[in-house]
Image (tube, rainbow, N blue to C red):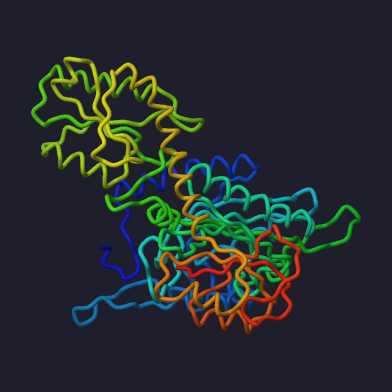
Length: 467
């Protein structure tokens, strides 16, 4: 517990997952031409006030600094000096980055401007959930400016594709991608695109968003440029981001009754070698030699295999179980028998912990990279199968809709159905705690009836319950 409502402490293993996630995704973002920056945590209230729709969307979640000094009075420390202008603790950075862009951008030659920031943000959550909705969380936020709508919309789609590929290839989480309905868009956005993942209880988790902001923020911040024809125009902007809720997604998609199962591509350690606490010099030397051989192997394009030897003064079973709970992909046990035979006994986290495999150490070293790749793929395949098994299509009546979310259905399904586009039907669905998670990019273009009101449908959508 952090001692602060809605805030969490990330211990080394959890923060290690975030660091690996950040390192890989950052490389992908920079590969697309974006540069990293850092902006202040505090945003003047006057900046926020310039964008009315943005303020309305975030007003209830904003934390505000009104004083800058404490004084001791009657044995207590009390705020003493009011600020001339209140400061909002960063809920997102469109306004403060927009103010800087207005100074940096002068002509079409300055565009596109492609920025990215890794930071923390604060949104005062009424009902916090660990990793999913916390008052303070870590995230990545991209902010870009473009000459026209077409270029900005291409950016919005491109970065959503980066997120989708990252989630599926690195976190082994299959996702659906599409657009949000108007009622679910980011405050101030023209369009919000999203990737949605299914958790093991069937609920949806918004795993990433990419927003086309039109020139709404540009007009509020005065971000204008001189075009080739000499005329002044407002830029078109985008913003996009993912957060530390991706760790929550990883836990809920891959975890089992024994704890976490971490995909090897973001595991802080790929292999842990466990020895008895009273191991002799020869056994310790064998463990160290094995670890060095493993750590010399390149796992993927981003890093080499990471391993260590666990010599803690604990019982073997306790040490093994601690690594099972953390989700280490491969746990290796070596004792006197393994030393004598130059073998290893190990378990794979994608299988039952009790399932032990014995191999000659040379063979294990030669196969370890393939095993890690296989574990990564197995996690993705299992999650993909689960998503497919709990996705329903072709339902046509509201009675079918109600039945899909009745109390005796678990896990709750994703429903690919028809929708008329009406807000009243959205409100009706919300009575069952169900929302439109996305409007898929790929539409069937076939006639049909709205699942809620039975009127002529306009769109294929995905309904689900969510976090």
